[in-house]
Structures are given as C-alpha cells and as structure tokens.
Image (cartoon, rainbow over all chains, first blue to last red; front, side, top):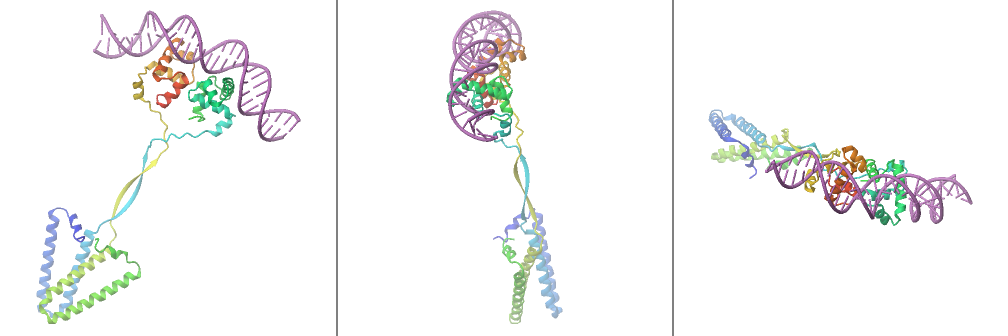
Length: 161
Length: 161
DNA sequence: ACCAAAATCACCCGAAAGAATGAGTCCTGA
DNA sequence: TCAGGACTCATTCTTTCGGGTGATTTTGGT
C-alpha cells in the first residue's frame, strides 16, 4: 500500500522509538481527556475538538515527514570537447581573390591527392601539356614554385581539405 | 503521499466547493454518530477512532495543499559543443608501426612545407644525396611513389599537421 | 667490444616537373 | 564585332625527382 511506503524513509531505530513514544503520549492524553469527560459532561464538544485538532496535527506532521519531494530539474551546461567533425569549408572568398579558374582548381585538387601531371591529365581528359600550363598559372597566382608548396599554401588558405 | 496526490489536481473554485461539501458531509457523519452514541453507548471508542482517522486524513490533505513543495534538484549535464582547437596530435602509434626514423620524419616535414630536396638538405645540414636516400626509404615505408603522395598519406595518418 | 640500425654520402639514369613561349578555340560582355 | 578571359595543346630546355646500387660512419643497446 502506498500509504506505508514512505515509512521506509525513516532511518534507524531511534526514529521508530520516538514515533512509538509519541503515540503512547497521545493515547495517554486521550485517556486523561476521557476521565475528565465523566466529571464535566458538557465538555464533550471540546473533547471532540481536541481530538480533531490533535489528529489534524498528526496528519499534517505525517504529510510533511513523508511527502515525496518534487523533482526539479536543473540543466547544467558542461563543456565537452567533442571529436571535431573535421568539416572542410571551401574558402570561396580567397578563391576569387586569387582569381583562380575552375581548371586550375581541378589541377590543384589532383596535385593534393598525390597525382602526377599525367594522371591529372587523364582524369580531366586533357594532355599533360595542358596540365602543365594550368599548374604554371596556378603557381603564379599562388606565388609558389612547386606543387608541394602549392598544396601547402592551398591547405592553409582552405582551398583544399 | 501518493494516496492523496490526485487531490492536488482539483483546481480553483471547485476545490473550495469540494472542501465545503466535504466538511458538511463530515459534520453530518459526526451528528449521525452522535445520535447513534445515545443508543449504543459502547460505540464510543469507534466514534473516537473515526474522528481520529478523519482528521488525520484532513491534516494530511491540508499539509499537502499548503505545504511548500520540497524540491529535489537533479543536475542534468548538457553537452556543449565547443569549437575545436584544431590541435594536431602526432600519431606516435602509426609512426612506430611504420618503423619511420627520426631523419625520415624530418625529411617528410620538409616535404610537407614545400621544400625541395636541396632546401631540405640545407635545413638538416646534409647533402642532397642523403635527403634522397631518406626520401626513398620514406616512400618505401609509406608505400608511395612521390613526395606529394607521401604528404597526402602522412596527413591522413596524422603524422604531419 | 660488438652488432644492428640509422645516418651519411656518392654516382648514374630515366622520368617527371617546371619555366618560357607561342598558338588555336570557345564563349561572354561591351 | 571585337577584346579579353578561360581552356586547350605543343615545343624546347633546365631542373628536380625518384629508383637503384654501393659504401662509410655514427649511434644505441646488449
């Protein structure tokens, strides 16, 4: 029964003992009032009132003792360094600022993958010479002198992942 | 107390009305019991017990209605995704797994900066030939055939930033 | 003191990269 | 229609890269 469930919260024997003593005192008071009732007959309403008050107080006390506390949820923000999604955002601004062409970017991407000029040419369906032309222009615009430098700079400028 | 908990759902004036009705019924029951008491004298203890039970319930109900609810704070941690510091952590495990030497790593770092073999040699105070030897061994261990491929692979393996 | 790994250097050769120059095609905007 | 940009391709030449081989010296650990 749910009524007795909260009794489990009463810790230790001392509290149980205290509760028993309180009940004994209560019964004693009741008996005393009962004796007084024989003498003063008109005190019946007072007696009933006393009972009501006493047990109302007992009810209140019980409720306060046993009432289940309401749960209040407090959200605490905790910083968690989560594994970064490593998302690459293409730097469109820098791309236009440098005046790179689409084809030059294609060549650059191929270079970053470790492809040779010949392989880049095959991927883009153009000759090696064309790739070389693009790469030369690319180097000029990036102000570098080799493909490795181009890759390094492009990575820093967030033109390639 | 779970037994009386539904009483809390009664809201506004209906609650007051209900309280009045409950009191009326209570008084009626008391009056009825009082009448019965004249006939059955020995029912006095039952009467007292009923009073006690009723007012205990009333007290509990009152307490539940009026008492300030005890709150229990539950802390819920909420993950806040903080901007990643983009910090580079050297993959020591992969480094040893591949059996790379210190010098080979030095050469690799130079390559990643876009330096030529000659420039790497100057930085490391060795001849170009030495750099070429290191790079050759490096390529074998990384299973690649060019410096750009080496850079690409090393980046994926988190050997270089 | 010895061994193994690492580091150093040298030489050759072919392939690739890069610089420089010229030129043809296509497309778009003035 | 005309200029300019992007794309394409070619040629020549120089430099660099990368593979292969061999050798000597340093270093670190047993």
